[in-house]
Length: 320
Image: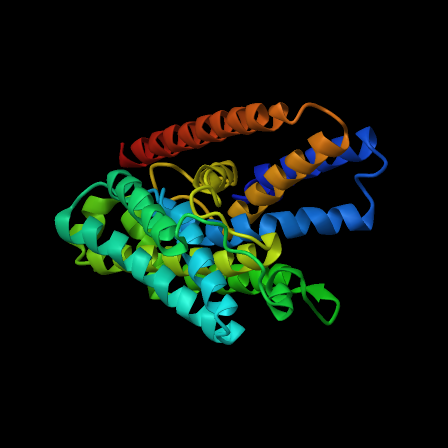
């Protein structure tokens, strides 16, 4: 039992199960298969973006531009498919645009040493402004029928968006856990000075992390455009960056960097999805969702701070 509780993701998994059980008892409709599938579908977009955000936060950074990248890529992909471009080619071009947005963030942050939060706050406005300009300020809609597959299609009975999230999450779990690149992310986020003295490629690692964040936001954008069916560039995914950051922190990532996992972030996303769905299906006021999310963030930060304090005491004890 002690070994299970020592697992990093144990608190968020346990809390997710408790919340799931509570809503199961509050509403008989919550446990219906159709509702559970709805929850999973609702978290796919934020879940995909959360993979990139986890790596950013592991470095001790923050990417506020993911929502604007999503709006820009979704607009471009929507315009391309409406112009008759092949769907998969349009998605590929959208991913290239997302990668370019991420590369711009990474370049500014690494080359000019501007704090992440300031850089991505600025590019958030720039990317969304470009999205509005490209769309002409009007709704992008009336997508071709085959475009619906990205957000609503199934492969072997499994929803395509859920399958994409699962594959990407598993892939980046392996990258973070078993590659030199993943170990560098944890090392740099855990102790930047030590990483610098050991000669790690800090700028290159940070640049690639933001590049991946942009690419993952682009993948989410294509699914978002297909699922929603219409894009308004000025308002699309307006607050999604805060939802994703909240989920990653609730999932056990430290705002100071160096601590967190993709698995924890996925459970953080799932927990918020369960709360959002459960509050509505149990006929509570939807305003409770924001209040509960805020409380969970505070609890997560307190837990992380206590853990850092405990670890520092252990380190001091070993040094004595």
